[in-house]
Image (cartoon, rainbow, N blue to C red; front, side, top):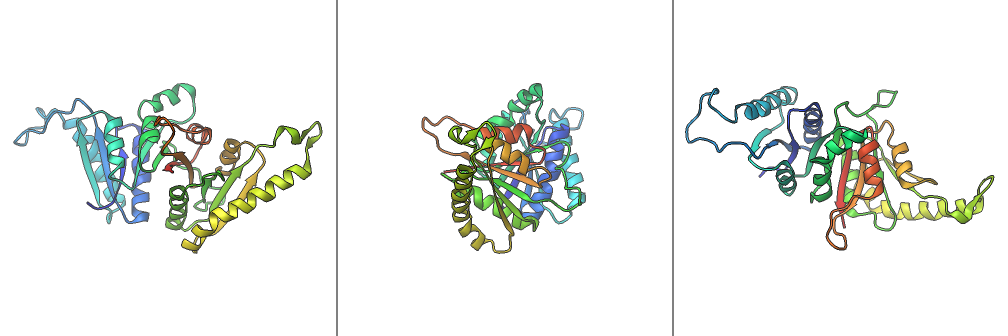
Length: 289
């Protein structure tokens, strides 16, 4: 099977925005695009072609075919496949992730009520999928004021940066021909906080040490992707705040998720949660060891 980018399609503005973003991404990466519509009540396909008025899956097929036609018109060289699956969307998408380079889903963004709606499908898929999952909001990724295509931002913890995370981030920047910004946030420890600010000696030592470790983590990937311009940034604030600030105007924000945790329970850390609920650009969550 040709490597694919799979997008979950349900007809909402969010899923259609995700499909358009996924088509652009598949074309950049030289992959096929699969439009997946999953619904438990889809009827088994009849042995012979049914007339539209008696085809129980008519509207589902029309949804997929309409999106397929639009995307094919804008990307004539792209292979666009349509798939109907008669099962729960979460189950179908997690299974599809195992057969895909990435899964792309629509996101409704950051309001409290909307976050619960998004959580019905998107959050469990993000937490369980074995491959990267990208969430795209209905309003397309923000572009910098200059009109340039933006950069890829990757959030890095220094204990376990994750090969899968860095490979995805560098590959994404290379595919777009844009710089990569690697961001590490580190809160100032309590003992370094003074009434007039932070202890400069302590913060300088923290920054120096973090930048050294950041450079060590990035070096082998910079050698693997020499065409990618890499900028590293150590910010003395909470990791979530550092990443959200760095991602303003970005083309893509890449964050990690531990694929295997003690107890086996799927889990998203605070940086991934903040990125998914408050990030304005597309957010890729990459499972890694």
